[in-house]
Image (cartoon, rainbow, N blue to C red; front, top):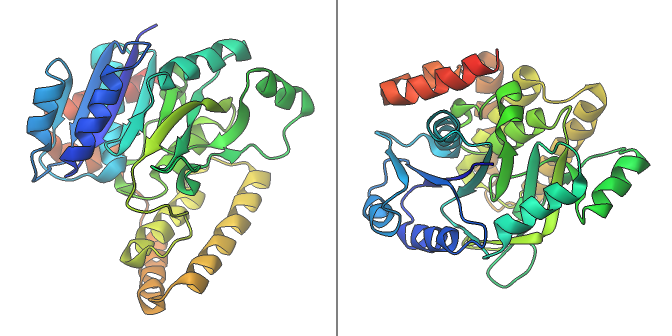
Length: 314
């Protein structure tokens, strides 16, 4: 069983330093580390070379956002490092020493194929981070709920990229993250399509610290980034189709309610209205491009890795 970590980095070298040190301290050592730097302008690349000289460092020529970074990193871990499981995280994610070991223990206790395992994500004060709370699988059968409980886990329908361990066989079937999302809903779209017909577990005994600037939920005021929330959510429902009719209705209603809460809390509603208008326009006007097109300018190595993963799932 080969396990690789993928860390996407962008202009947070101090946090990257903590994340890489935490990966080195894991009680279950990693077989490979892939660091994808999104054209940082600080010393992130130097930090990566200093602290993880044996890691596979991918220096992208432009910022592709989390979506592009994870598409590149995941395809590289699968194609170049033969990973069976890939542990995905941003550069502001600091795993506790047993985080990976606990994910694997839950996988073993469950006793069946698991496509995804997600850690408990806390903030710097130890409180659960509302931004990264996985979505429980709705209307789950009692037998499946009991099986997850026996594994000391909860069955989930989606998860975030803040400590998400994925099975590469399942990824080959469902596909990589969609690079054109750039930021927001990229992890939701990727994990929801991965888990449409497979099992995902939230594992509270696996703990990571998400070092965001504030302890905020997904309905906090996003400012002009609300554009990506709207456009990408429209793309998700129109083009990705990670849900059947029942789940689509549930998550559609959930989205509308969350947008209403965002507007209610916002002190800059004019900015949100502008993001809503542009997001609806662009979400309806064009679909997201295939990764092979969206990332074609990043070089032959990137294109080959993407193509290899796409071909293996066909």
